[in-house]
Amino acid sequence: MLRIEHLRVGDLPPLSFEVADGECLAVEGPSGAGKTRLLRAIADLDPVMGQVFLDGAERNEMTAWEWRTKVRYCAAEPAWWSETPRDAFLAEADRERLSRLLHGLGLEMDMLDRPVALLSTGERQRLALARALIDEPHVLLLDEPTAALDAETAALVEERIKYHVLSGRSIVLVSHDHGQIERLAHTRLLLPGAGAAGERAA
Amino acid sequence: MTYVPLTPLDLVLAAALLIINGTISWLFSLKLEKSLAVAAVRMVLQLALIGLVLKFIFAQTSPVWTAMLGLVMVVAAGVEVVSRQHRRMSGWATLGFSTATLLFIGMTVTCLGVGVIIGPEPWYAPRYILPILGMVLGNTMTAISLVLDTFSEAANRERGAIEARLALGARRFEATSNVLNVALRTGMMPILNSMATTGIVALPGMMTGQILAGVGPIEAAKYQVLIMFLIASATALGSFFGGLGAVLLLTDTRHRLRLDRITAHE
Image 1 (tube, rainbow over the protein chains, first blue to last red):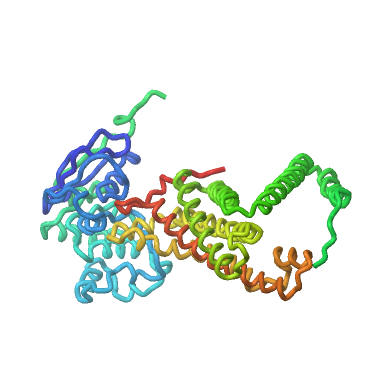
Image 2: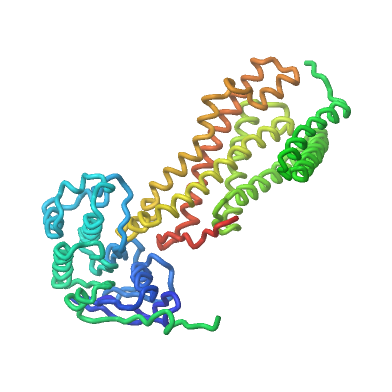
């Protein structure tokens, strides 16, 4: 179980909530409310006040890379650091499992060796999801996972998200697609707009 | 050894050449006259001052005075590294770390070059130590600032890729490896280029100076070769420590990319 205690994200009041195993939590709120910053803070990518626990263990008790292997952030706009997506997948990743994962997302194995620049935006987004899922993190922090996808491939991604949750792991989902939240989320967290949370005299 | 000493009148004649700069500035309304005057006066004063200081220190031939001037040079180079940064990473940390790096490299490379290889009597003879330290520091300083600048520029551009790797469980040196490679290459390129072209386009300054002072060209060339090797090793070390420092300054112990530590400058 992921437990957040008094996490200070931007101007928001301290946030405390839990995401149980096998649960998908949707984070909602207007643009600029701090949804992405919340996901980044949980993944320990930005320094913030507050504590985050996974199964009772505070994240500072483990190394940063152990934490991010268990609690993984998947950005809305995936970035790549080499010519082809291949380098983003662990060399020791089981070929069979990788192939199943890619097919489940409507991707082909040979896409791993194509230049990233020649892949479509949607293919890149799904490949980024695949690289985040390959070692099965306990918690996946998804930022707009289907923003660049058509309805058909978005449905494949939603299936994969459901499978992740059904296998007893958790998702924190940021999405502007209300239908998607309706279909996937068990619980919701509404972040107040910047105005409501942090209105200050000019 | 023969050389022709310059009289004050010679220098006045040379200064008259600045009329050319002034005229061009005036003709095209470049408004450079004031800067030109300030720069010329500064140059004359600074060189006269360092001439006097060196005259004093050469007369002492004392390790303490030599070390003191050397230290001043190191700190000045450290300050220069900081002020050359287009995007500054928290000034004091950069200053401390680049000054320490310059001190270490300046000391080891200069002592190796002068103490072990040239071997003057006494080994700390300021006439050898200080000019060579100056050349080593100048080039190391350039290497460090190039590496820092390139690293912060590239880390800013590649932020998404670095954080994607961190999110996948990479450690900070792994996540920044591409950026670090670019920065290290940039730091080490100038000396490679200058080794490859030296002597073809122009004679290096030190060699020219020695020839003017009456040293034979072959002797002067040998000194130049020595100094180029010293500079090459110093800039490699400078790039390495600069890269190490850049990663440590722009990431933290929780392996987060800390671009918030950069403040854009100018």
